[in-house]
Length: 595
Ligand code: ADP
Ligand code: MG
Image 1: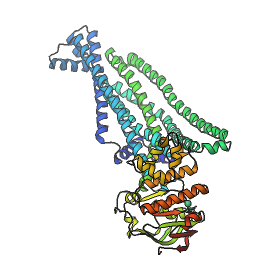
Image 2: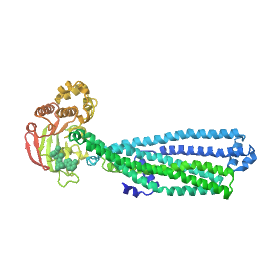
Image 3: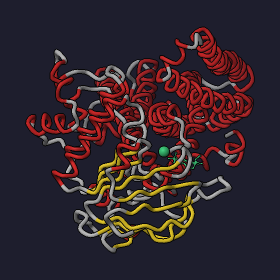
Image 4: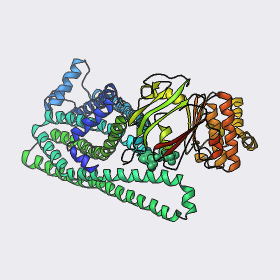
């Protein structure tokens, strides 16, 4: 990450890249930024006008209302006199005061909207960025998604997306600072060229002096990002592993681990705070020193008159916090940049691994057959092929068992069908159509797939059952539960369908979980049902129940059932047995259907 930062040495380049990234990905529209910059500019113009009117006010008091003396006292006073004359307003203390008040009031009103709109834009972009990050990562290919740690995923869509959006707030602040500079430089230029020149030199020197702090901020911010990723990952994983942790008496270790990561975050954060503090500490003494020396110089050497000195004082007092603000915004900008680089990388990587789920031929329910022709598959980074030259054919409505040792390639074989992975060689045909040419969404809507580690959401039974078919009626749900031999135990729960299943469905037994998952599968209208070792976690009795559920299902809806099995009770009933060994088909026992 640090080396990545070094690639962009210059802040303007950083900002341009950040802006182009947001614009290219439709996270912001130009008009939205122009609108907030316009409000910032208007605020500054009103403020500068408000200040400009204060000087003539002082001048009028100084000259006891004598208009001629007032007009000749300074360029600014002459302008004000001309403008008042143009509008036919008499020049007096009351009118000038009223003008000053109106300008100040307007400035505050515009500034109110300016602040709100700036902050709103930040939150708008945060929202879009967060949703798009989730979308990008979750629409990517399996090989990309399985390398993302859950904590990194959470952290990117919350913290890092937020910081990337917060950079926009700095844009607004920097723009405003620039405008204030220009406005005050103009006021000062009108008042005195020498003073303007001196102030500019001072500010420039100050920026250079403080640039070391910016470099350090950059460094600590990227370290912070790394710790945040670590911590989020730790939280996600350890909470899921809670039972394992307490059973292995590892809680103390884990708490120590949490403490260590948090201590690192704390120490780094304190370093960043110290840097920000140092900025404030150095800035005010340096600025005051400059102010005092210059004032002495004005009075003793240059003999500059009082109005000019007053203007200088006012401009300086206002410019001081603005410069400090500029410094701290540059610092923030630099602190947020590692987050942006990280989000950009995630966007690019996920984007280049993206899957188009919609495009392609729309499939209807399976009529004839599924055929694997010369299919080989190799997991990236693995030496051996997980599947080698696989050929078989499954007729629609048949019952297929896939058997073989653990690691033989059974799950890989069926992952290819819904295109979770794509073959390196060969093709798979669905009623004669190469599935590569099919819309992934339509392919998957024809397949109900219970994975080896079936998943239940932390919600009620009914919510879980309706996940794939939201319009399912209660009757349909009870029927599916009956089919899956889950009716009795769900009925016996005091809350019935409203029973809460807990994280990963851990509030019910393993066998009950399997049957709820089966019921969910039975609710779907898919013509192909894939079950990856559905009875592996079950005792004999539950196994038999599931067997009978599968039988009923087969007879009732005529679906094609592919089951990865290790129990002979299942195997005996199948039409085809595919026996895998080290990624190859050993022997096809063919009963009714030709393979
Ligand atoms: P089975 O389901 O028959 O137990 P799998 O199909 O899960 O076997 O695995 C077949 C082989 O592929 C094994 O050697 C396994 O280690 C490897 N494998 C499985 N999934 C991955 C993966 N995501 N990345 C790399 N290798 C994998
Ligand atoms: Mg498996």
